[in-house]
Image (cartoon, rainbow, N blue to C red; front, side, top):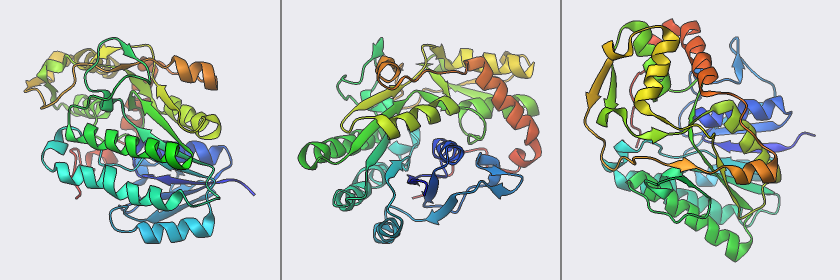
Length: 331
């Protein structure tokens, strides 16, 4: 029998790609999300309207359905639980900080408390974020102190600290990942790369907050899925792994690269907007640990990833134009 993996947040961009990678590797997967399964255009494990074999979907909300989720896990006894589930938007977290804390910190804590008693659980992978470090200078390693700048980052840092306490007190088999800015095909349209591609193809305008001068490292989602799989299989409990490339770029320059790929004049489609509250100027990650310990390396360049995203948008243009283009908040 294949090993069973429970993926929390399987509707998310990273979660859906990780499901796809697991299925290709022969795992049996239960995907969990608080919303109904996403439109197939966002699900790489769906081909020609058909899911890949080995996947089942469970609609469950950590804020309300921990008992039902645990009943399902007790039946299927997944060897691995990988947690992508979170309220993930940074700017919007200022509007309802209590919701971010409940969804990202308090409700998951009730799940950890139940899971720590399950002898069938081999590994719990917490998908964290470099936002917990706040704005940084240079490339930071996994040991840098937390200095979160937004309610979202605070909620994720608190969740990580809870889990580390569980590891130290109970031997809870948690391992952490923190990835740079992920992008690629099947990403929601409010994210910068697919948003820019769609706007450029349809004659729209892209807003650059603060002029787009903040610096980020962008990494192809398939490289992140590969790294997450290696961490799940071979990462030692209690360890944190950064997943990033060595390339750093400003948001403005990134948008210009997208414009080149689509063959439009970027400056005709850019509008400067005000800076977001708590926006970090930069966070760049040192990924030498995962490269040495788990023999991981990134294989797709920024330009290749942009080309992949452009191709996906072009191939699904009519469908994507009918999808929501902006973030839709769910309490």
